[in-house]
Length: 430
Image (cartoon, rainbow, N blue to C red; front, side):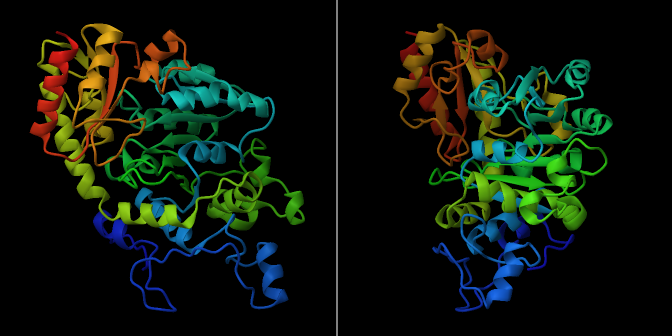
């Protein structure tokens, strides 16, 4: 299929990247469960290895099933190319890898998934990288945090766990002025609700484990390149603009243009980091993408109804859902994500930490799971689990304090979910 500009989102989520199998005519993309591929001849092999020809070499680098998923996600996000990998955390490292070096830093939002905060606070230091955490609602603070060693700015379109909405365009204006890329984690929003590239993002990362797959079966990640950043405008990004010793001095940006970041992600990132997505995971995610818009509409519909019910309940201190008119992000959400503010949010339970633990234990329809974006409704007490590694100050900054639980609202009957919360809250606060 040619991913032309006239195709709508619902068509692209089913057809983008996919073609009937040339050998069998199979309409669904096959699982190419193979490690290697036979070259036509020695000249063909040499051309592939020197990046003079595009094709399949070894499944750590490229695989036909994964390639379809990469093309589909790129089409849905409006990017020029994409690289899939083994998890959302892998995608974050893959996104940063071509940009960073010892002594370089990133500026990141304080409102991020707890695992990302840990990765940026501790793990990346082993590479000699640093991270500065800033409240992205304070645009002056973001500008002030950027220095001569900053190589990227990172935020979540709809933040996990609180569902806060980022003003992507405002942050993009800052990064454009500084000539550095803006990386947006679009996991919680999906390209159906938010299109970060249209708002100025350079790169988009996903944990495909979540809404893109939508069924809680496989882990995966993806990095989508907008193709719009000039990697050669400054000397800040030598991995993309300077000669690459491993490929006889080839310059990725000069050679591949808008596809430079994508080719580097495969030829260097997957080659050396090995964060490969397996073809079966790609197959499950491809099937998930086919119903993405349908599921997201139902997720949003349920989330709005349940958030409103919780906000009116005396046992709840507050609800963070940006789709509520009481939310400070309500007006922003209408601009950034007009189709809905997603289905991920938190609420604070009167009774604090102990009441939250009891609530989680008493629920019957909700599943107590460290995941989100499933068709099933999920709940977790972030302070004791996903954000447990953080200090209490960091937990509060991330919207994951001791009295807060995070919910990922699924596609079940909303009234059943409300009844389940009602009975569990009664037991938790009795």
